[in-house]
Amino acid sequence: MPDLGKYAVEVLSAYAVSLSLLALLIGTTLHRSRSVRRALKQVEARRDDQKPAADKATKDA
Amino acid sequence: MSIWEYANPARFMRFSRTVLPWVSAAAALLILVGLIWGFFFTPDDFRQGSTVKIIYLHVPSATMAINIWVMMLVTSMIWVVRRHHVSVLAAKAAAPIGATMTLIALATGAIWGQPMWGTYWEWDPRLTAFLILFLFYLGYMALWAAIEDPDVAADLTSILCLVGSVFAVISRYAINFWNQGLHQGASLSLDQEENVSDVFWQPLVLSLVGFGFLFLTLVLLRTRTEIRARRLAALKQRERVS
Image (cartoon, rainbow over all chains, first blue to last red; front, top):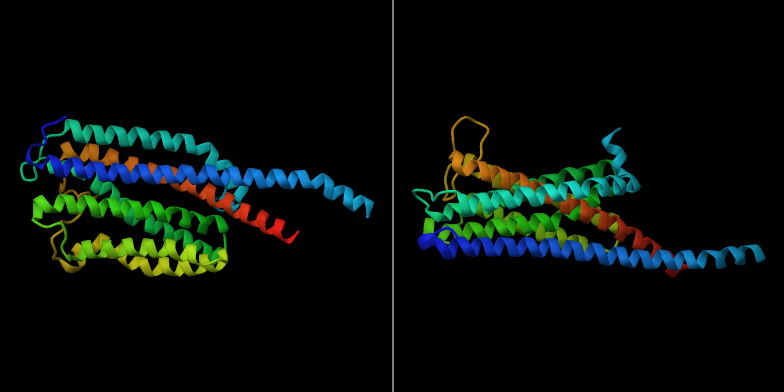
């Protein structure tokens, strides 16, 4: 660690605040990306399961 | 190959999937090198002491805060003129990143200002314009969340973006307009006059470019999420109807 002298608190708190905000931004970005992707996969899987049933209903009609 | 081809969501998804690993690696490398070089391997400034090390966070974040709003303005105007959904979703995706950068700039500026100027805050033209720009970012995100119809939300937020651009410009050029205030002029300049000494300038540029790549990484990732979320909403709507 470099000798930050009398401004150590200011410098370290600036870095702590900035890096925390960046970590929060990156974390929320990744979290939302994963949850939306998961939800979309589930809905698309449901839609694909319903397709054969829908095709059969159309044929019977 | 025209840039307008990326208005096609499928094409945009393929393109962004290819470039994401590269831009994210570039972001991580440049930010790490820039910050480590700046923090550990640069001397103290004769006037500002060790607080000069805050420059490697403050200047890149402030620069990105303004440029991200400009990007949002361009993509919003593309929506208004050409009605490309990917474009306005990119603007929506960029807003939280810009808000975070503005907050980092305000916070690091305040922390730096106290020992240097004897105050955390001053109603100086540049600082005030920056605070208003932050409020515009919050307002933009709130407006998107408040309106149910995504196309109406896109239209209204595009207008808000246009209005807020005034403060992005003022934040950048306040010193030139008013020639007064506490905050100094540009740290980086294309003209020959040296604003920042080379020993600080080199890691600063690395950090700045790293922040640029970080923005690119996050906006591509968030835009992909917005495109998926839009598709999810459409499929759920179709489920409800059927």
